[in-house]
Length: 149
Ligand SMILES: [Zn+2]
Image (cartoon, rainbow, N blue to C red; front, top):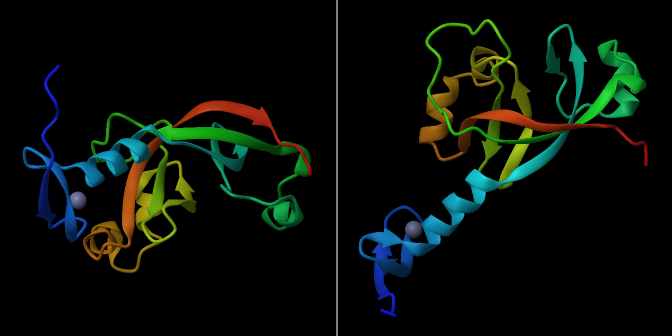
């Protein structure tokens, strides 16, 4: 078997000297893979036909007019299709904000991309360009009853 040839080179994405195979930074590759395969848990409430109030905590449920029994735990993941919708989607099209500093999805998850867009004073693109994180289309893998701890 042919050995993989690592080459130490500067990566302008992670801005450090890293192992490369060909022109591909192996550190960035591993990170990318991890993020795209990642599943995460988040609480939400099903209202009408879509989930909202992502990240809701039982103690705040009444503030949102939700009942604790309506809180569910969603297992979500990044969708393969990351095409940015040109118009409002008829059905739920969940978009979430992956916070680069925290290296995880925040509670900023909405059933339409434009709702997420409204969280940013200068828009999603500005925030992405500033390296604060990235907006991803995400999808529900599984729903579970929320268990009070
Ligand atoms: Zn890199």
